[in-house]
Amino acid sequence: MSRTVFCVKLQRELPGLDKPPFPGQLGQRIYEHISKQAFDMWPAQQTLIINHYGLNMADPEARKILREQMEEFFFGPQAAMPPGWEPAGAGPNRKGGGAPRRK
Image 1 (cartoon, rainbow, N blue to C red):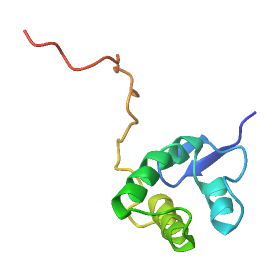
Image 2: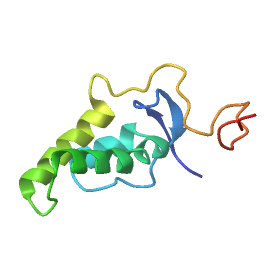
Image 3: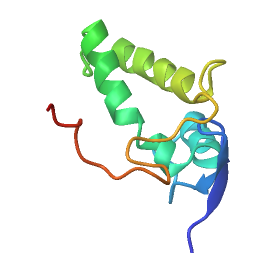
Image 4: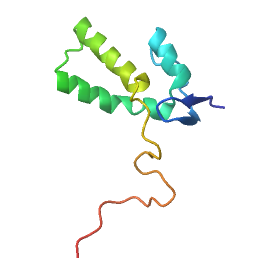
């Protein structure tokens, strides 16, 4: 049976991670307060940050910057998704597919 958490990012009760994503205080905080669904949003944001700032992940200072950005992404004052937000492909009337065809 999977554990659930109240996800501070998505503002609802959702399945949590199976274990902390990495050691340390931030990893434990993410484990306790971030859902698996919200954590799965991080890789795209991480790539955007690395590319935007031109971070070299071999550099300890770059890893520190990325860790700070991760904390901001999950727990900063603007971290929660807007009310009514649904992930792509979610929602009761969502059928999928692309844009409507032109006539």
